[in-house]
Amino acid sequence: MRSLTSHEPCVSSLRDERRPGLVREPQDLRINVEQNGALVMQAHTADMINGLRDLIRFLSSVTTLKPGTLITTGTPAGVSKLADGDHLKGTIEGIGTMELNVRAEA
Image 1 (tube, rainbow, N blue to C red):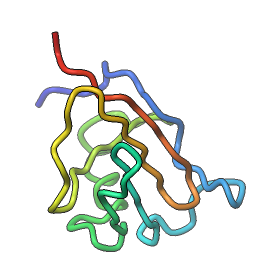
Image 2 (cartoon, rainbow, N blue to C red):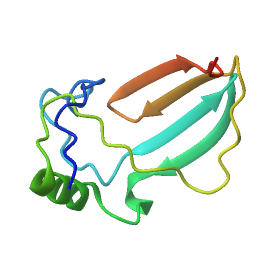
Image 3 (cartoon, rainbow, N blue to C red):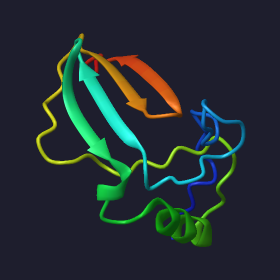
């Protein structure tokens, strides 16, 4: 199995901005995504097929997870397509917001 150990982390560890320390219940967080200022996705971690603890348990058994490791899990149905120039803003309740601009590959 190929290891992901060489990949660089791109976010800090899961922290709760309302309370110091780690998030107490990762399966109880609201997630919102805006595309060009319009709300295009609302989700909740309780609706995930595989819980965050199970994902972390499995991944840590096959690769090294370090603080800052980003675990991507996919998206719920109905997410819109992206186009060059789109602006995305994703927020996880109590953790924070990440924004990015979409650029087409050259």
